[in-house]
Image 1 (cartoon, rainbow, N blue to C red):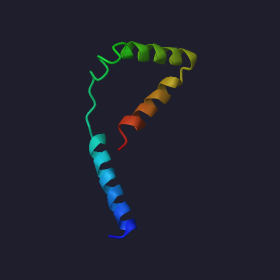
Image 2: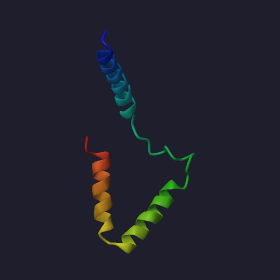
Image 3: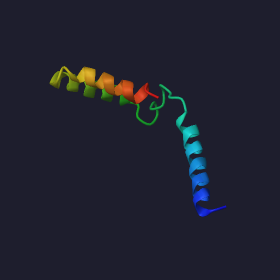
Image 4: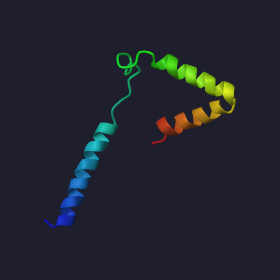
Length: 71
């Protein structure tokens, strides 16, 4: 096997492994033990951002959509 085809095969296997890991499901209780105050911390930060700039809500919604729903 030529070195370039070996590196291609190796890269393909690594990519397949990463894709398998990336398809894991999210859990609403993921941070319950590692960061129990995460929801109140996020809520406080978002409220502060909305008070500083009322357009921030639309920006955050758009970011959330592109981060979570676009495949």
